[in-house]
Every structure is written in structure tokens, then in C-alpha cells.
Image 1 (cartoon, helix red, strand yellow):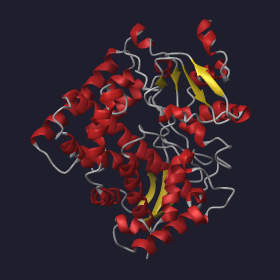
Image 2 (cartoon, helix red, strand yellow):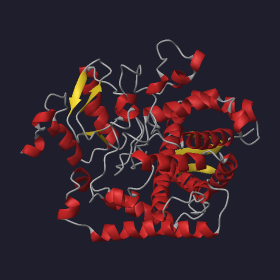
Image 3 (tube, one colour):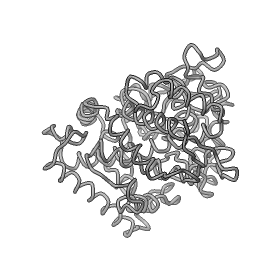
Image 4 (cartoon, one colour):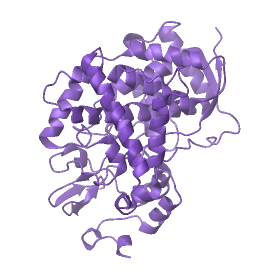
Length: 445
């Protein structure tokens, strides 16, 4: 029974009862639902809030090393910009940020959007979460690796099938909750799938060494100190972070605009005023504040990454809650920065469960809805926030503006998402709407 009782050195901390949490996992409840149902009400009642030094002080709070037997991390690897610490992280961060800063490939996003619209034909009922996943997969392949995964053009793309098979295989609730099961009840068939997919990234890397181009991996290869394993592990991170999370955000944006046809039309009018029938570019996208606000609100209300990789202090440390309480944390205690809980805390966000783009409209927002911008955390906070933030936002803005320019859409009356986005279970705690169909029709001018 001691597995269900907090250790003595942690019993001074406020805590959600363990049994409802375990029952949530047993039921297969997805991460964001569990957080909103159990964590958020508890935090609101206790007036507990964000401890910003967890992200700001990366020397005291480095990333925790994942369990050796954990299969999700077998896929991702350990020598990358997400999991490394200290001087290794600084080296990875410098290489990644330098490569990302070389270009924002809006032209590539435009080309892929037109390709996607071609697949959509004349519209009708389409599975939007699948289409946006294929768009973002080809976007990360083309712009990051200089490789065409053919996710849009080939509905049975072998790479897409292999990736989805791996993600479905490792998303086993008992193994996620108790990683030691991998040691007690190993899954050799799943390990074989993971290693086969990882080897595909090795092949892409080898091809890129002999066939360089105008892409992020080419720019990274200019660094002589990075090993092949480090390059590959970063490739896997960019692959997951660069397509799963962006696809989830785009699905959420389209969903909330479908729920509010008047807002969708206002966004379309703004797009047409800014770019007419032309393609989006950096200049005309600056004239779309409402679209930008809707993207930011979609990233808040259904945050693609529910929480960050845990932090762990090697020594005893303390954290200051936003309510003024300071808590002593024993050495080697796993601490999570829960973005979803922060984005739904009613002390930070008035009416947090409502889609209100006006929060991000600057001088046009009301006093009641205006918020502290530092509490908007889809890309995390502090020195280790996502280095691809601008890349992701421009990808979202490009596809959103072209979609509004050329299409209008509604949510089917019998949609399982009628009341709110229904996310699928993810081994990486991602909030990704699943089986989200939309009724599309072309805009007539």
C-alpha cells in the first residue's frame, strides 16, 4: 500500500487525493480532462499557482532524466535540446537556435497549404485532424529535414503508417503509469517497431550529409561538434514537436471558429482586407491581429503540450507559490510545470473555459479579460522555452489565413466534439483533437 501514500518528506505539500488520480488512469482518461477535473479545482480552491523559478532557475532545476526502460524516451532519445542539461544543453540550444534563425519558410508553408487544398477537392465532410496532421508532417519534413514524407499526396504514406503504429503501441496506460512494467513485462515487438522508425531518421541524416539544402538540418550539420546520435535525437524531437503539437493547435483553432460562425466571418474579412487574393507573407500577416489573437487563444484553451518534462533538483530547494507560500522540496523530487492547469486557473484567466480571443487584442481587450502575457505558456517559459516558437506561429498563421481566404466550415451537428474538443490519449501528454470532422465548402467571391 505504500505506493499509494506520499513519502513522509512530501506530506507537508498540498495534494490531490491519489485514488481519484489512479482511477482516472485506469479509466484511460486523457491528460487534459484529468487535469481540468481534478488538478484545476484543487489549485483554485487552495489558491495555489505558478512557481516561476522552476523555469527561470535552470541550474537549480535541471530536466529530470527519464526512466531507462521508458519506451517513449527510447524513441525520442536523451541527447537532444529537450532533455540535455548544463553545458550540453547550451551547446544544443546554440546549434538549434542558430539553425532556426536562418529562415522562416513561409513560401514552403504556402506551397504545402495549396497542396492540402487540392486534396480537399470541393470540400464536404472531411477529417480535419488527419489533414492538418499530414500538412504539419510534410511541413516539418520539407523545412526541417529537406525530406518529403509525402504525407499529403499519399494517403497511405508508409512513414505515416509506421509513426502512427509506434505511437499507438507505446500509448499503453499501465506502461505509462508504471514504467517498470517495461522491465517486468517487456514488449519486444514494440521495441522493434521503435528501433525501425528511429533507423529511418538515421537514413534521412545520412542522405542529408550528401545532399544539403536550405533546411534546418543542413544548417545544423555545419556544427562539427555534434555527433550523429545527437543530430538524430534532435531530429526526432523536432519531428514530434514540429508536427503533432502544431497540428493539434490548428485543429483546435478550426474547431473554435466553427463553433462561432460570426467570429469566423470577422477573421475572414480581416484576412481579405489584409491580403485579398494574394498569398500570405510577413508584411500582410502583421495586419491580422484578430487571427493572431484566435491562434493564441486556441493555444491557451486546448494547450497542445499539457506539461513540460519534469525538473529535479539535486539538492534540497524551495519553490515560491504565487499565493506567497514557500515550500521546501527534498532532493531528487520530480516537479512538473503544468501548463494546462495554469491556462485554466481562474485567478489568471477570467472565464478560462471560454474561447475569448479579445484577451490578446491589446488596447481592444476589456479590463476584465486583459491578462498577464507571461502566463501564456504554450511554448513554456524561461531560458528553456521552445526555440521553434516563431517557426510554429508563422506556420499556423500561414495556414489559417489561407484557409480563411479559400474555405468556410461548420461543425457537424452530430459531432462527438459538440461541447468541447475531444483529445486522444498521448504517451507524451499532448492534447490533440481526435476524429474531428468538419463540413467544408469553398468560399465564393
